[in-house]
Image (cartoon, rainbow, N blue to C red; front, side):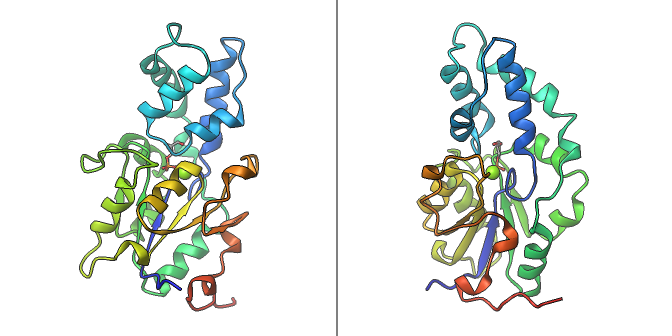
Length: 229
Ligand SMILES: O=P(O)(O)OC[C@H](O)CO
Ligand SMILES: [Mg+2]
């Protein structure tokens, strides 16, 4: 069994309940073209950086030549920016972050969200962010390729103080197939907490798949149990 010495959290859909905002807005934009937003399209977009997600949205929706990826993002961001400050923590986040902190396990966030949106989403979650050693965002200059490339997780692991973790000693928590793939490409262990609407065939790569972070059992990775309150 691998010894876990460091933890990396994805953010959207894993720490914060923000994927629903993306879905509502993308459904609204598509409805303007008489089209419906589907979970199969959502599954391809989630976890990806904005520009890559926009290309997928326009292509797969058959809107090439009708709606440019840039105009899609302009419309999407205008609607999302008023929603993001309302972001709520997902179940189990506070207990899990508190546990890793009590165990002295350093944590960081590795999110495809750009810095501007990260700031909007976390404006009311300063305490959570303060418990992270650092945050790597999607537009970080050191992150050359977005998820499913391993870049963002490798960059996040490299920013911990010495002794820096080897990938095999890092545990990643993710909600998206793209993010799970990125963690595995980085050589890290990964716990997936997928949205229940996500096609189950897209949830079979992770080391562990949970319905909620509340179901995480530290002993699965050789760590002490949660202390019963
Ligand atoms: O925090 P991430 O990596 O799940 O990023 C989320 C994307 O920007 C939207 O799915
Ligand atoms: Mg996510």
